[in-house]
Structure formats: structure tokens, C-alpha cells
Length: 303
Image (cartoon, rainbow, N blue to C red; front, side, top):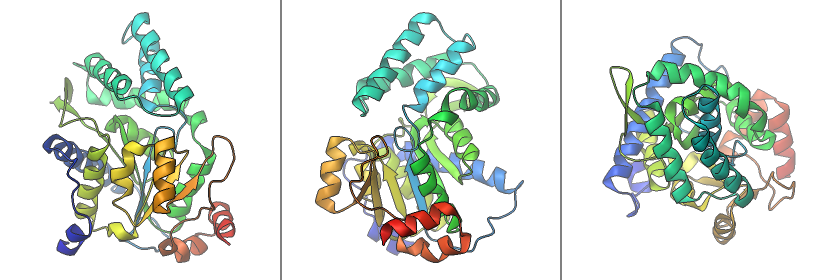
């Protein structure tokens, strides 16, 4: 593992709070995955155990922002008033139109969410998250990105969501999509009750990279054999960690950077292709073994 650390040096932009947020998210993700693995058999397709795929959530896997959809669901359940809902709606509309994250909007949304859930039990929010996924999120999953994730699964690789959304909600989405697990923002809880504080900071920007790094070290992954997918230039630190970075529905800054670095691109918003895209070569044997339509289609696009 010392060699892995040498291959993935920590960027200077990572702060102590970023590292704390990343490590907390990785630990929460591993715990939730272990709980699921105790109930379900191991994935049957043999694959590269040192390779995995990491997918950003908002506007990469799902249209819009998960946190805003979650807010709509909480409003429906009378967790807060109409004025708060209007603010959530405005932030979501701006995000959908601009296609990029506004740090101020995202911070306001997180602060609101923390104050709203303070005093509620973690188990309560997990149960509500299941309902909110069905109500607002399921129909907003990008089919193209979902096919990419499935191709990795069919190759016998693990697939993780990496998002600034609460880890409890991210875990629900990952499980519904049949993914391995999720890395998300960890809200502090005591005796199963939210305190209204975060552990470290939101899982955003450098903190995402720290979470991926921490999970890779804990799971024995070789990041040079892993893939990562995102739409935002804020995730360049995470994308730069892996050997197979992909820009999905990229904002202008990420598109420019991806072209400079010769990263692969794919845009599902308009149907146009920025470049042909496929899963990394390391997944090839497993994809054939899986034999799914998604994997075959991706393989053909590479030819």
C-alpha cells in the first residue's frame, strides 16, 4: 500500500477538514456495505478486485441535485415551511439551467438541511429517503450513465457513488441502482440522533478526492486501475486520482480541462458525442463474461 500512496500524492488544496470529511465518509460507506454484504451473496462475476469505479451523483448519474429533491420530500412531510421550499426550488432551478454548482447555493442548502434534520433520528431519515427516491429521483437517473455503471458491475468491479449529498440518502440511491455503496457527507449523530453538525465538511471538491483515497487504501484498490466520472470541474481532484477519468455532461471548465488532458467525454443532455467512450481495458474480460447489452454496446462504440 506504500506504493499506492506514492502513486496518488495528496493535493495541496486538501485541508484538515477535507481529510476528516473524506475519512468519515469512507468509514460510513464501508460500514453500510458490510451490513449489506452480510445479507446478500458475493457478486458472482470474477473481476479485477483492485479496480473500481467512482461516480459523482448530481448531474452525472441524476438530473439535478439530490439534496434539493430531498428537500422537496421533507417539505411534503412538513419538516419545514413554504418559504424554505421556495428557496430550495430557486436553487434547483438555477442548478438545472446553469448546469453547474454554485458554492453559495450549495452551502445554503446544506445549512438548511442540517437545521431541518437536527433532533431527528438517523433511522427516520433513512426510511424517508427510500420514499423520496421513488417520488422524485428514480425518474431522473440518466440512462447512459446508468449503463456505464452497470458495465463496471458486469465486469465484476465495485461501483461507488461519491456525492456531497448526505451519506444516508446517497446510500439509498446506490442500493436502488444496484451499486456497491456510496461516499457522502457525514452528519454528526449521537445515539442515533442528528446534532445539526457535520463531521469535517461537506464532501465536495478536495474532500471527495480524500474520501476516494481513504476508501482505496481501506479496500486495497489500485487507483491507477480505477475509473471516475463527473460533470463538474470541482471534481478534478477526484478525477485526477484515477487512471481512467471521464467527463460526463461536463461544465465548460471541466470540458476544457478534459480536452487538454485527453480525458474521455460524454454528454447525455443533448445526445451529442464529445468523444467515443468505453469502460477501461481492465474491465474488458469481465464485461464479456457479464454479457449484458450495456457492456456490448459500450464495447462496440469503442471500435
